Image 1 (cartoon, helix red, strand yellow):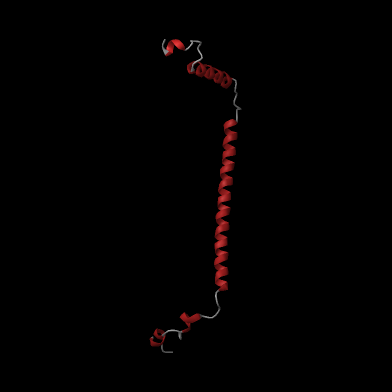
Image 2: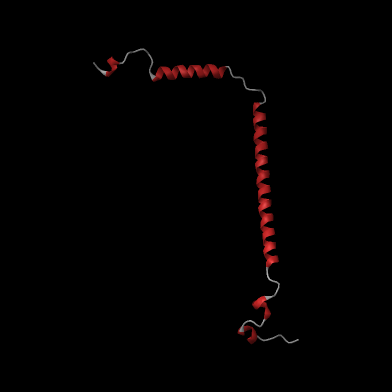
Length: 103
């Protein structure tokens, strides 16, 4: 007795199931009616989402840029008021050896 003889031939194989499923889905799809303006509505919603995404991105970039400027200004404001060694002209021996301009 072979494997083919042992399996009863009732038509319950994957081919029949696939065929029944295909027929059921075709019948279901045949009864579906699309709204006349479905494409326009879907496109409008997509465009609104796209505009909102771009607006949120632009606002986020503006906020990051403004924060960077504010932090930079705050850091510059916190810098010491005295000119320091570099600009005093008395801090290094090289500054003393430079020729001074005549008045």
